[in-house]
Structures are given as C-alpha cells and as structure tokens.
Length: 394
Image 1: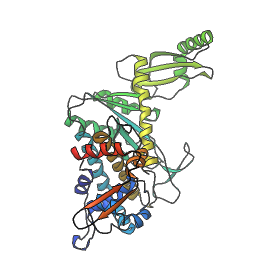
Image 2: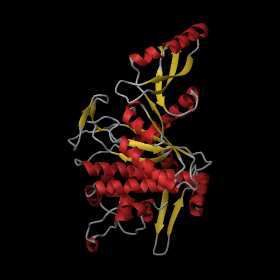
Image 3: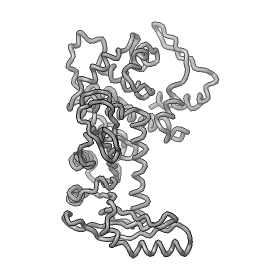
Image 4: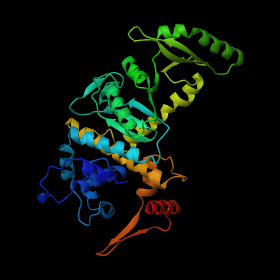
C-alpha cells in the first residue's frame, strides 16, 4: 500500500539527521504496527523493541526505538502533521478505486473520548456524563476519510460543513461525475448545511429529532399504524412524506415519516432528505445503513485504541487518534488485497489480529536470511498460507 512511506514523506522531520538512530519511517512503522498488534501504550515498546518479528517488519536488525523516542515523536506533532496524515488517508481512498465510482455516501458521526486527566480542551459533556473529547469521524463505506479531534464544548455538527465542503471539492476533482450523498443522524440536521448541499448538488439524508409539530403533522399515519397493530397484534410500520420547515429554516424540506406501532407503543421516526426515491426504500436501505458506521467507530475506539488520549497536550492526542486511523487503514488494505472470500473478509481488526498476527513462532536470524518457523498444529495455517500468497502476489 505504501501507507507508512506516504505518511513519512508528508510529515516534516525537524531532527538533526546525523544524530538520529531511527528514521521517521521506522518510528511510524513501529508505532502503527504496535497498535495493529494490540499494544496501545508506549510503555509496551520497552519490550517490543527487542522483538525480532517487529524488527523484521520495520526493516531493521537492531533494537527498535525506546518509549521515550516514540514519545518525542508524538510530542512534536502539530496541525501540519494532522493535515498531512488526512491527505494520505484521502489519497489511499482514491487509490483503492480502479475505476470512477458512480455514487459515494459520506457518513458523518461523533463519539466520545473519555478523559481522566487535565488534558487541554477537556469539557464535561452532559449527554455522555463525563469529561471527554468529541471527535468527528467521516467514513465512505469502510474507508476512513476523517478522524478529527474536537473539544466536547461544541455543537456536535461543528466544522462538519467545512469538512464536507473540502471532501466534496476534492472528490469531484478526481471524479467530476460522481454522485455524493451526505448522511448523518439528527445531530447533523442544520439547515445551513442542508442549504449548502442543495446549492452544490449534494444529496443528503439526515435524521431529525422528534418534536410536537412533526408529531402533529404525522398523526394520520401514526393512527393508521396503531389501528393496524390493534387488528393484527403485530408490529406495524407506515411510511409517508411531509413538508416541514422549522421557523429558523430558509424553506420547508421533504421529511420521511416512519410511523411505527408495537407492543411498546408508538415509535415515530423522521428523516429529512432531498433524494428522489420512495419513502421506505430511503429509510430502510439508505438511512438505516448508516448503522454500519457505528461498527467502524467501534473498530477505532475498542480494537485500535483511538480513545487513548493520554497526553496533556492537544496535538499529540490528535496524532494518536490518527495513528489509530492509519492502523485501521492497514487492516482495510489487508481485507481488500488478501481476505476476499475468506472467513475474515468482514472480520473486526481484533479477530484478524488474533487469527493471523498474534500467533506463536520461532524466529532464527543470521547474516543472510530470516527464518520464521510456525507450528504444524496452527489451526488457521491454510488461511495463513492463502493470505501470505495473495500479499506476495499483489
């Protein structure tokens, strides 16, 4: 993929080269591979630096960098580093398409990064009920495009308009005819953002929070769903469209109504969109598909430690979140190049890690070659051979 090489080229290395034992590329590879292997802390590298397999992966035969050296790498990070890594993530996404895509759906969502110290920009968030950051993620399918750290003292949609604008312009430079759709939950229902989409031929399908006026306008379909439930004793869903605009909006827009009634009572849901398809199709097949993005965020936060904001300073914490994003991109590359039509084609990073990466072996190294002797009782040896062959052939 050339991922770590691209990041090393994009970042500035201000160190005096003659005094450095470790290249920027080697430091990035050591840190990213460590995250991919499940080692979240810098302290883990006190022992990992002597690991022969990790040394081989980073093209070294000497001891790797110490935790202190890796810490200095993180502490040197700044805004320029974050911009450069995001550019690499975007370039990787473009490179994975052999032909121009017909349609791209950009999923926006925010999550919490709990804080347990006095980090810069920390704030108590009432919804999550703790001190946290509020990072913004943007995915297109399974591909990570944006991993943007923010203070939780903001509107969840803060900066999403600017990020959407940058992404749309960059995508259309590569693929002028591509259809782009913005998708998000009710936290991103801001009329100025929707107006921008209308003016720039960007589709959108965004949740909108329930309110009394919406409930009044959809009462006919809610009563219909209730009567059908009382007749059949089975959960009923009725779909319809209404035109709705809050007083602060520039104009009314199409809102899809899902009037649902079950043993738990009424459960109406609303989605605002400018897409032309039918109500049920847009709700079930387009809007609800955004739930898969929640799994991608879990991959980041739980399997690859994107929520590990251990530094006091802001930019090192942003850098750590982006390192997690780079490790996630490596796993996506592994899926694309070697895991198609296998049992791990859609597996989580943690399952891939435990099946293919963190397995026992004996490593023998001399001046001419490195031999890795694996157990003949390895339960996934056929899968391992298949993946190794595909990677070697790609």
